[in-house]
Image (tube, rainbow, N blue to C red; front, side, top):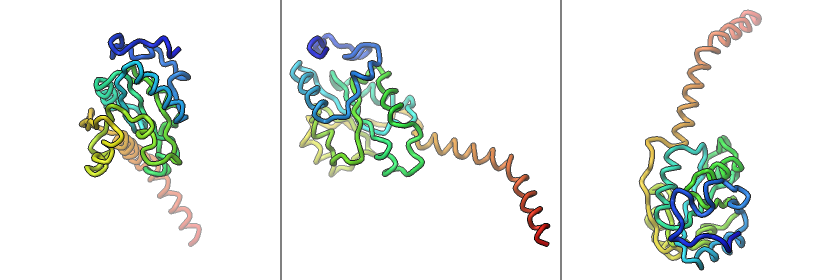
Length: 205
């Protein structure tokens, strides 16, 4: 399959290298050796490799716009996706909301994404970046500080820092849902709880 891939000048943003279908089994990677060989193949064809990374929990319009803009910086977009364990270690036991299998597959339905790579908690620091050595690494201001960005240039052709592509974030959406749920519970449960407590107190007396 890889030998018949189109060259960069035949690839369009709308279709991507793998066409319009998700083809998840062909586009999902969890082995660093395999992703290294894949990158070597496309680099040999003259493709400019772009790497973006993140959790992509509850994929929203900001994620889609971010990845589409990332794809404009090259010919082949790899998206590194944090595993459930990696996200829990960083954001707490309630995250992610969407399990890794669904997050990974969902991203392959975005036309701008060529392949997805699962990043595990046990992985070494910047392991995917060091393996891929992208021509362009896509980041946000929140992802890396200035010292880290300077250090990353050793492993990348260049680092492009993109601004947020939406007015909300996954964390903000989750907080909003929590607030709405709490308000509903407040109105529906409080009277019942008060009544139960009162009955218990009356029984004690």
